[in-house]
Amino acid sequence: MSYLCKTNALVLSKLNYGDTSKIVTLYTEDYGKETCIIKGARSSKSKIGGMVDLMNQIQIVFYKKDSREVQIISQADLISHFPHIKESLDSLKYGSGVIELLKLLTIENEVNKRLFKGSIKILEMMNTPDTDSQLLFLKYFTFFIDELGYSVKEEECKTCRSSLNESSKVFFNYEKGFLCENCGSHHIVNYEFDKELFKLFICLSSKQNDCRYTSENLKRLITFLEKFLKYHLPEFKGIKSLYTY
Image 1 (cartoon, rainbow, N blue to C red):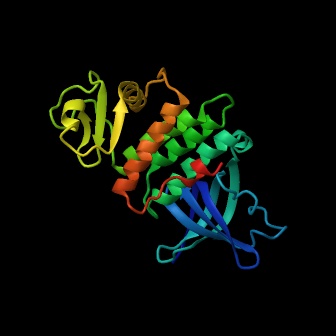
Image 2: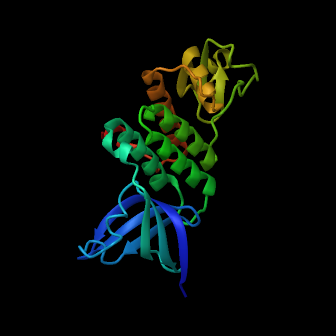
Image 3: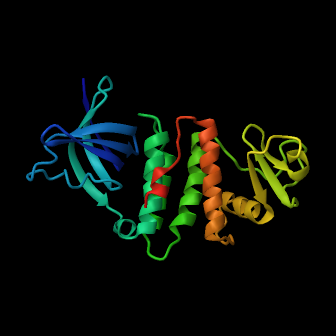
């Protein structure tokens, strides 16, 4: 038996199906990630086919049946298509990174309203002119990893418990976590932070708004988080959109 559901959603992907239909992957506020079909979406008479486009925020009505893998959308209304993101190559790159993380690393039907709201919020911020999309994406990436349950926030050495803020260098081991310079010399080091880079990482992790940074250091931290996720989630091969645009 199917029941009628209404929820807000982000469009993660779309695929033509048959002669006139589309299969779409959505991250919804109330039902988690869902795969849905829009029958007749490619017809010129379809009112909803054009609204369900990549990265759009929409409100949908769909028929949900738990035993069915693909749900049926009966209605869709556009909330936002984030026009500034799609007009700016830099913003599009990092906005697409948000969508890619949701598509690749969230579990079907696992509800996380905090993650949904955080994803909408960061896209709205990226959609504002004169914002640094790279910085916003790094903040989102840290938040996303926390929501997955793989926190990398730490201000003391995992071995000796000394403060890392005083270290000239900080090391990271995928199993143990952050290590001071002394303890790092006795373990396998998977990533090395200079003092400036680590201070930036702590500043961003603590959600401060006055962090001093360079684009190169933001890039280094994004690379670090990608490598961290690749280690813990072998099926994750990286965020392709960051290297496509």
